[in-house]
Image (cartoon, rainbow, N blue to C red; front, side):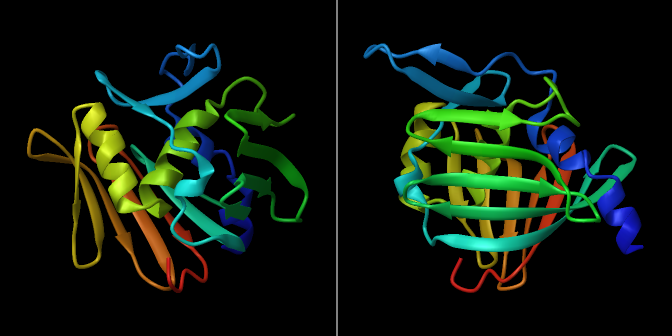
Length: 194
């Protein structure tokens, strides 16, 4: 089962990214790229800077994901702090399958396994919804017509009172369910204080 989990590695990319979305970079008034992801068809979420993370992390995560009738499993090494987010995707043998980096107002994804199929802004957006400061998220989501609610077990993202994304967190896992886009994933790791 462990081999199966890791062998079907591409799901996180398919799930968190939703490849059918349009490109996610535009120029801001200052001329610097403004990175964003569409959380709904009309809600353009501007990515927050790395300083918004609640608690730094440097850890291995086991990821299980589902999209439609498909289930996927893989491993990622995640290092995230106030200077940036770095995610290395690994196969069952520990070989590098791809790398994502978000720092200095830029986001990169490189992979020989998934060339051109990943929009890393969507992965960063989901990561921020799970692990960034709630007040910063509240302000950013308000700017794109959405809202956030804290719950006993995590947080919910709403559009006009309808829950579109639910996030459940505890010390051993973080689970994101995107009701609008029809995908979900669970990150397993040591999330104490996150």
